[in-house]
Length: 152
Picture 1 (cartoon, rainbow, N blue to C red):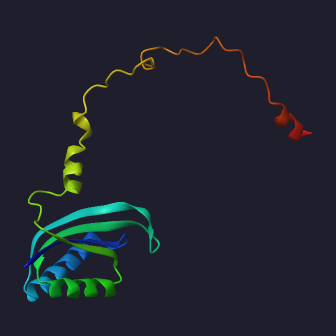
Picture 2: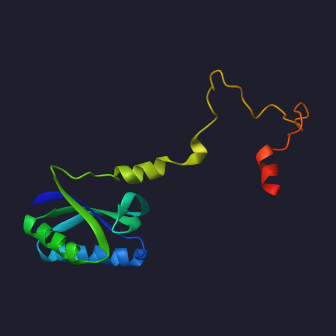
């Protein structure tokens, strides 16, 4: 059987439970046509780079599929009919990725607590150390001329 990576985007106003139900519908369709889904990765609600069918966000789901091509054609036909799916993409691959995808690895690596101290700032001074005080060295502001002209 051929190996595929399949990603679909569901509308932003669909609940996560409805996205899970749609994923289960795809799983049963592929299983009934002689295939298998080896990995399901819901990436969650993410912003889109541009609007798609008036949606600014979408629920992303990645599926690793091992199935005959007829099963993929039937799943794509089903998704094209479904109003909740705004885009889908199926790519045939030579081998499936075993671990988490790049999107999930990025989410795990983006922990802000592990960043450590800042490095050198070059020739820029560190503004946090200096006390600005009340800035008494400045002269007071003069009134603007265009504000006075409107009052007449």
